[in-house]
Image 1 (cartoon, rainbow, N blue to C red):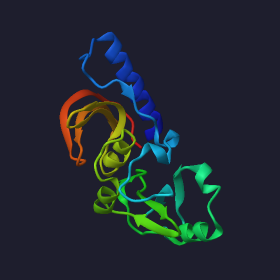
Image 2 (cartoon, rainbow, N blue to C red):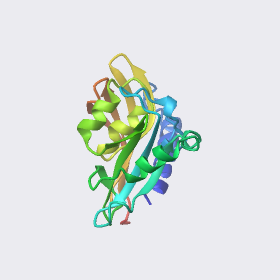
Image 3 (tube, rainbow, N blue to C red):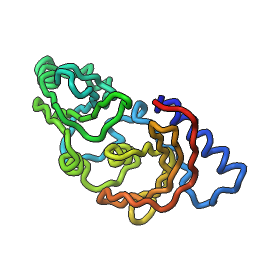
Image 4 (cartoon, one colour):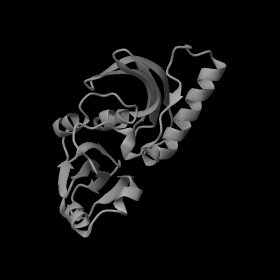
Length: 201
């Protein structure tokens, strides 16, 4: 449901921007989705050879996780049996952010540093991995702990200006203008659009 609503939110934003002359200085560079993002699109502070984003539902066994994104699948195909085994055994019962309403799930990352599998399941470890926010792809990870899905961006002196969509389980959705500095601090600049529909998750 959220994926469909994010697509609709992006479409609505484009219509608003073209028809209503919505502030020419708004970010207008489309951000690649995580599904289209490669490991080389990030600039991590650690030597990451492969990374995956995982999702699991609270109440499930920690081994019952789902891999949402692989960075990159082509890299995974070259991993050794030892690396693949270490990846499979690296799990967590906590995560970064929440979703999957009306159920409840969370997300975490596992990356390989040579043969060692490292779990990133909290904001502090994620911030340490990211270091300075200097790549557009990193905006996805910065906003993972909140309600936002980045759609468009513009690099500015202090970091990035971002148009991000959001949706809740009460039928609300919209787009906000955010500013994200190099340290990963997120500031709401203004509300661009807000909608209310008679639907629930």
